[in-house]
Length: 215
Image (cartoon, rainbow, N blue to C red):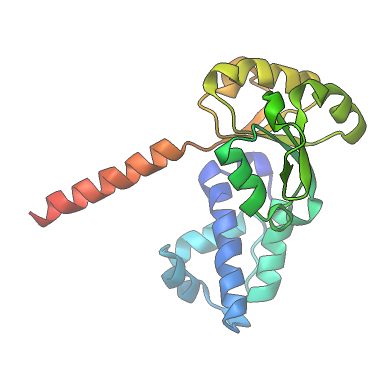
């Protein structure tokens, strides 16, 4: 494998998509596939696919293409699917509950080990076999369980104080649904920001411009 520090974010961002498409191919009974066939499926060029895979050493065989099961397994290892990192969720509101109830964490490389909220009225609420804990208990929990990452489903105004507390507990990786920009104050953290409003407005833009093009 080549130096991971030289791999662009765009390549890394495509890895989960490759993993998902290869899983679909397995379900359809595919044993092997060429880069050109895969490119048609994914809306990428065959050259782009080969370049992406070459960052990790390349996986195909000339004249054969890619073994679908083996390629998916290799990409899963690169992503770290089998590491089952311990993750907690902070914020048991509507969004937090939906994530805890409907996301299959184990298929994404994580184990959800705790749910926290500052609203004491939610303490004890059962969400997918985990009882919501008071955020006041976070220090002792982290000391005992040592989670690797946290999901933040909290208001922006609470972002800094909550993140500061979590960092002090040893958590430096975040799946961030809040509008708080974590890296501004904590530059050494690993953050994946999810902005649902931005995504919806991007859809709005694409519909608008598609309509304009048809005029």
